[in-house]
Amino acid sequence: MKKYLALILALVMAVMAFAACGKKTEEPAAPTGEDAAASNTDLTEISDAAYVLGKGKLVVGITDFAPMDYKDESGEWVGFDADLARAFAESLGIGIEFVEIVWDNKIIELDSKVIDCVWNGMTLTDEVTSAMNCTEPYCNNAQVIVIPADKAEAYTSVESVKDLTFAVEAGSAGEAVATENGFKTTPVTAQADAVMEVAAGTSDAAILDSLMAAAMVGEGTSYDKLTYVLPLNSEEYGVGFRKGSDLTGMLNAFFADAYAKGTVASLAEKYGVSAAIISK
Image (cartoon, rainbow, N blue to C red; front, side):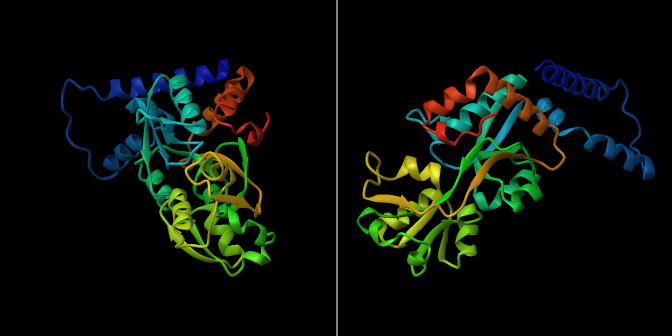
């Protein structure tokens, strides 16, 4: 933890030094040629952590995905991921902003610096790990099939659901699994929309993250006539930063400290995901 705090302090000092260098008593002539190219490189090659610390807030890309990220009655974003992200930002001494994104555009939003990370129960797929600098996995997951509860007994194998039409979130692990199995799909914007498709009868089934399915359908939920069956795979969640970002190592260090202090276990119990947590 001391090394972690020392790294933060060093980055803050670097940002302050960079800002101080920008204060001039005289306005020099604009650089040209090779000098101009060198000047532009100097301005763009600060570290990702220094960039985020310098602007004073961490912008987190999310979707409405209970129990990981969702709004409470006051309209504030809460959830297992949201609460951890807020604690991480506080440990850095900066603020936080949650931005709801279209999941299929997450890599574009990250690379263009609309957001600083994707922290939303994100499955560590090959596409994600090749496009982002990802943390160590912190949570287990699986893709499951959501169907009307009164039809559940008819669907006990992958072969038995081959003729169904599935609503899937575009760009999601659920869509990838559906494609791998040769399922007929209807892409939608969010996993919540996929559930609505099944409830409305416009799709036979949906493919969801198991953690979301457990929170969203079944007895005691708004979709008590739906259930989920047939885990289709095994997955792990991670947080994604821009390629080469030094924030990834800082978050891994934060996770280690949060595990040791019991913060992760406490939040996991609060949001009902204790069974899915990867022990450290």
